Amino acid sequence: MASVWMVECNVVDRGGAPGSSGIPVGPPPGGGTPTNPLPPTGNPGEDDESNNFCRDNHCIPFPEEEIIKDSSFVGTKADRVYEKLLDLSGGFRKAIQKFDGEFPVAHLKFNVDPLMPDTINATTNNAQKYIIEISINGNTLEQRTTLGLARTMAHEIIHAELFRKVRSVNNQISINDFPEIYDYYIRYLKNWQHEQMAAPYRNLIADIIQEFDNGKNSRQFYMDLAWEGLINTSSWENLSIPEKQRVVNTIIGYKNSGDKSCKL
Ligand SMILES: [Zn+2]
Image (tube, rainbow, N blue to C red; front, side, top):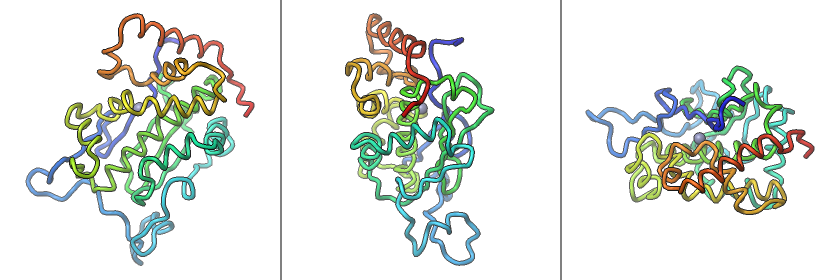
């Protein structure tokens, strides 16, 4: 592996620029229309694929019932990891629901992309109209540890959930609806999602992979693995050098020795 660190994901937000996560926190400049459309209504005549899911101004709620699997995803190692995550008693499924799973503003889709550069584990794309799409790198899939894949899924699901929350208020996050997102956005702008993930949500990523792994390792191990993709954050910068070294050693060690067979 060329680099110690993989990019856990590229985030593609509306506007299409990787890494951007712009949230207008007030009316758009110049009084234009918001960049995010209102949730689909499913009215006759709307030639939109969301009509399949949305009726009478109500869409079938994300999370699990209407998750769309692209044919490139079905039956892959990523799919098997995903299904196991859903089968866990608490973990993944519960984690999704924790983030206000009631807002029917976007559907979640998974695919496997065989053309992604080796240095990227996944992408979460928020640029489509009614779908938030998670692409898993198909190029590196067989080399990934199953636990690392589970972490990637957890990481991307948190991106998707954060985007979904932002969509649920029509991209106009305020301190009144999602104060934590508002706080991170105001403080960190483009990197707000990774900053938020590196702080409160890193525990959640660790919870998910610990459960996935039947708790075979220490809590510290799962917390360390959860750092991947989050080193461009202030939380990472605040770690001491020995702490950073421990995390790096844990991540490299597990990439070399961890189970990649996906016997789930
Ligand atoms: Zn990410």
